[in-house]
Amino acid sequence: MADAVTTSMAMAVAEVPSLPKGDAAKQKERSGQAERRQRRNIASVPTPSRAGRFSSGTPLEERSGQQQQQQQRCQPESLEDVLRRKGVDEAWSALEEMQRKGVTCDKYSVSRLLMKTVGDARSRLNAPRVYRGIGLVERFIEAQPTDVDEVLFNALLDTCCRLKDLPRLEAIAYRMKELKVTPSPVTLGILVKTYGRAGDSQKVLQLWTDMDQQRRSANAVTYGCMIDACVKCGHLSKALEIFAEMKQEGKHKNTILYTTLIKGCGLEKDLPKA
Image (cartoon, rainbow, N blue to C red; front, side, top):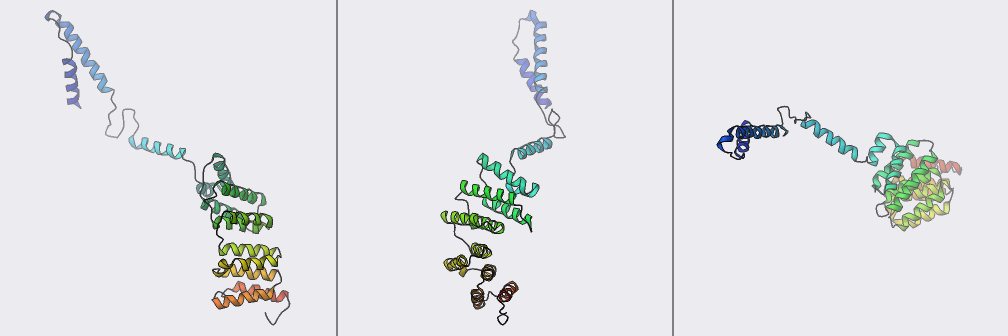
């Protein structure tokens, strides 16, 4: 640094124009002024010190940390972050704000948010909260129709089943069909369970027949929903028939199924079958 200062000073002195010999004093004074100006210019340049500080006194590491914090403040929280840190109500408000601003969201976060809302209710649902969630999920489907799947629709259908809101469930199932979203065995289980609770045996049997592809790949849970629906509708013979099919496929090893069938036999006072 000292060599650079000396060189710069020498260049500044060299730039001073020569004067007649009688003006030697003025020439010396001008040289001194040029030298002082050069010293001030060099002193104004920020130079790092041993502590990694600029002349302003702010460490490099501190400046970097401040910039990162500022960037984080500028980035909006994801729906998952809001749900984890602030709860379902704040998460629904965040989704509503995102929709108002036209910001897209992923279907997985929306599905988890709805299932979390229903799960938090445990034995008794908070109907206003749940219906608010249903409305925002339906708005998500309308805004991003190409970014939906059966998992999201199953979450909606299951929520309506818990609310015993059959008209809303049917409207959602129809919208699922319109968007050509392929239902899964879980979808079949939710639908037959809902209609079984409503006592609509005709719809239960129709769904079980029409959704042949889903029935063939159904697991014990879906079969259990169907057997329970048949028992609730008073169709014990159909429940036993389905149970026999399960035994043939090796899917009958479930104590809940036996309990449901025993209950059905008790309701019909058919002790020999029990």
